[in-house]
Every structure is written in C-alpha cells, then in structure tokens.
Length: 111
Image (cartoon, rainbow, N blue to C red; front, side, top):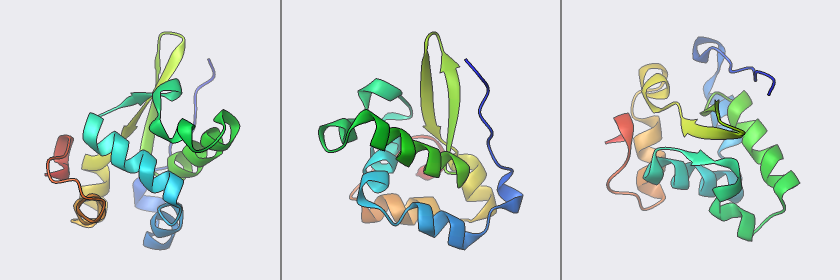
C-alpha cells in the first residue's frame, strides 16, 4: 500500500478547510469520524448515498485539506480526523462544525 501525502496544517488556510467542508457528503464523513474516532474505508455510512469511487474522491479532498489522516490498518486504510492538529491551527473550528452537525459528545480533542 503506497503512502499518502498529508499536508502540514501550518500551510493550510481557512478557505481550503471551508471549501472541503462545503459538501454534504464530506460533512457526513466528518460527522461519522467525529462520533467514532476512526473508520475503515468500506464502513462509511456515506456509501449508502454515493459509490465507492465518489466516496474515495471525497476522502481525498478531506485528506488534502488536512482534515483527516489515513493510516494503513492491515489490508485496509483507517481514516481519522486530525482534531488535535486542526484545533491547534484553528481553535474552535472543528467543535463548531461538529456542534452544527448535532454532535454533542465527540471523540478526541473535539469536546
């Protein structure tokens, strides 16, 4: 499995994050990740809405915007929010987004 590029959040601007979060499917992915702490690719709820190839595109957009980190997990890839890093760079942004998605108890540094 080839390694994926994860941007340094110091180089990511707010417009890039907002652009990545401007899609309902990507917000659904962020909601699920915030609630669960991490998801393997084939287990995303968004697969009931979009095809695997479309979901892969959305996951790539989120990864390239610095919102999620992808790590190998056996023959699968695990997706997790970069909550601590995002909160360091943009304090309060991710908790505000997840609160807007109706998530009161969140994983990691979101609470």
